[in-house]
Amino acid sequence: MAAWTAKRFWKQATAVACDGGFTVRLDERPVKTPAKTPLVVPTRALAEAIAAEWDAQQGLVNPDSMPTTRMANSALDKVAPQFAEVADMLASYGGTDLLCYRAEAPRELVARQAAAWDPLLDWLAESHDAPLRATAGVMHIPQPEPSMARLTARVHGFSPFELAAVHDLVAISGSLVLALAVTDGRLAPEEAWTLSRLDESWQIELWGEDETAAESEAVRRDAFLHAARFYGLCR
Image (cartoon, rainbow, N blue to C red; front, side):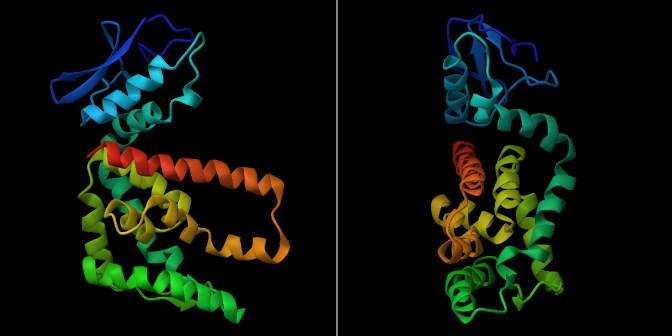
């Protein structure tokens, strides 16, 4: 990456308008992705968030502290060149969605899942005309082909930048339904995260929390919430 150096050399990072959207300049040097693609993003808000990450670097550049920059790079270098494949892969989650595979026991967990997840499946059926079937256990059940076709069309309707965020929302939660509920404004990101961890929360209530597992969950939660923020910055 032309501007991605091991040590800070610039005095100021700024978001500026450019052909096709907005970019970030380090002094007068435009930022590029690791694949040497000009970093052009769709909104000023997103460019400003990226510029803030670059301005926050002191001494050695730490890419781990720049999640917005990394996701924008991914949108340009990975998602855009293979958009159809990525969209199809994410849409396929609807066929094995977390919300469709329920516990067989105990009764309290079955009831908790139904109370939390059924309204979202009802919402998907009404708002997207894409009803999905729920089942108890882990044996695969086919979903209605018209529903899968409509969900695929919805996912293909995202921009590459939006799809980069949706990728993380889906992959981290295991649920296309929850991801769409976030992007459509049906759920707040924090609420969607909580609903995705329903089974884990049940286990914690029974057996207590494991410190190592809790640390891993915190990292995943932060990544999920960041993906939701990134999606908002794209619009």
